Image (tube, rainbow, N blue to C red):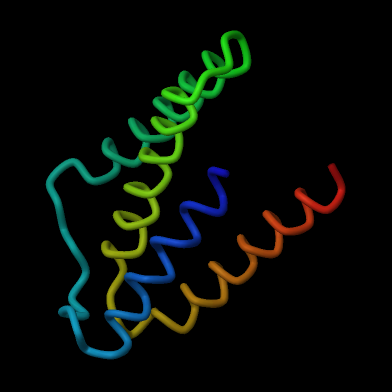
Length: 103
């Protein structure tokens, strides 16, 4: 779920940047690295909570964190690097598909 959500929103942002529908400048939020680390910590905590007590609210929370992280990760990269980002996102989707098939 996490990899798929990151790939989904990241791909949307990459498309919007490549088609010039949004600015191709990198998003430079103050503390952006802390935001990324915080999102990963939140993901781990929510995943552990979901494994212990599975419920829909926790699954939705994990998905929301992943969607936001995918947007932020790609938005913070400039438009000139989007072909590399698209390649990376394709790799992520391959990981997600392979994991689902092997389960």
